Length: 281
Image (tube, rainbow, N blue to C red; front, side, top):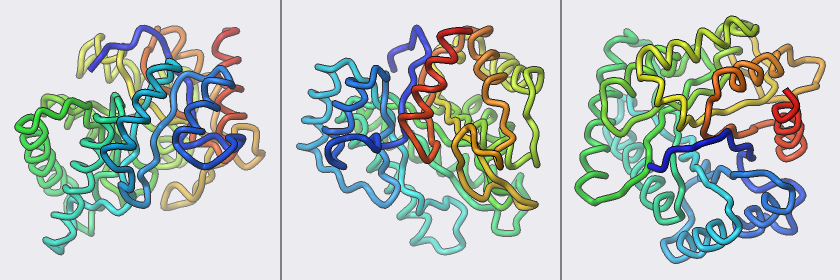
């Protein structure tokens, strides 16, 4: 995919202030607000057809708005039910196909649950599934980055190390790093400049410095408990202890490029907040 030359700021889905809840209206509002990108939220199913995807691409191209995709939540590549695994693979493939038609650069998803199994066994199962998915995409000439996401719950597959390892081992797979998820999963860590820097340094060490030029990132405030993520919060919510300004400083200092998708409940308000803070660092 095209390499980013700067960090783009956008929302996870249609901005709340858009005139309607359509993707087209969302892209127009992103442009009006001075944001850069939007994540197409296929979280309850891939309901966008091929024709609409091409319309979306035309509007986004005309307005200079870049796109990413979030696949449906109902994905578990480690389900004990073969039909659910098959359906999970298909949801990722459908997301990639429609996303590519819409001109999106990257498609992310929560890959699996551990289901009480050894994490190393689950890793191999997820890896095999992603190899099969990548083979399918290559055979059908669908060009979009496949980006499994770091997850926020201890029951979910998706530690930083697991996601980076998949990207290292499978051509065409890249990490989607959700910093709020990592913070929640780690019981409040990472949460400092040095800890955030270690994440970026690990990516650079394992995947090469070029990986920092085309990243898919998620950010928000977050509330967590003993088992990890509970819910996303605004950055300034008193319950959120996530030091997002220190993360922004790391991204600036390391000249990280790509997509920084805001998943805050106030979407565009917080996306504009972090874009303005970043600009003034």
